[in-house]
Image (cartoon, rainbow, N blue to C red; front, side):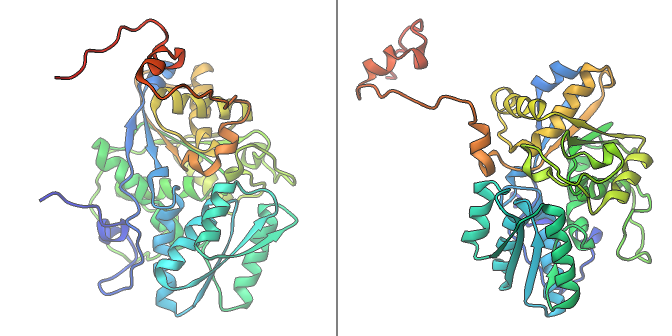
Length: 378
């Protein structure tokens, strides 16, 4: 009988900090597609795959860390979870809190959240607090709140979040048969690049960046190599590239609009230890990459997700991509999270036709006026 995916904690029990009988909160996250992208092969001279994290239950990679973070909260007896968010974390935290029977509170920058993400937090019943400031202000407030009140912090500074997120690297190795040569991903708060490097390191049998149990028995290696980690930030929100915090980060890619990443040092360690790099791309390149993914690969992502592909294409144009390399780009969130940006500047004005096949065949948009009619099926 076919094996149905059971969620991260059930699929990787030996590699996650939970024991038999521990409470597990899952929406069957993980097991996301790894899609070959020939259109990106042609642009880079490499073999490129896209890890489609928008296929997670709430539409982003955040679900990987939320299953482990919320499961851990259930062990503590705390009844309220809180997070700062640019959108995806709030959606995930609210959904998993519902599944766990907990209350959730979200502190977010006023007017800076895409409507699709805000809608998710609302329908899952989160308490929303809007701050006249940026994400970094929100995270500072939440950290102070959770230090002084019986509220659990579920942002990526929570080490259990990274434990869940590292499993994406396990899946990639399992799907490819080994680690890729290069892994490219967007960098905002920098938890994801940290978690992927942790996962690749564990699968290669190496010491991890942030193990929760240093006495645990090391498991056999499942891969023979480690990838270079390439991180990509938005031009107006690139503190890791500039080497200093950005006080007023700005980019169309709202999910990575962060000026002072919480996992800054870990991200630098992942970059340096893997002999990789972190660069930045303009919003124009991000939107162009989003369009390429949708129109040529068949994967619709939110703008921040496309930063990884934008960075890869920019690197290829600069001659920095090794020919024939195997490369994985993480695309972090579903395009339905932010349709307004995707449709920006497009004319969406469709004239109706008569309700007949003849009118449909005559429509230039359907048949381009040149195709012969197909024979009817017998």
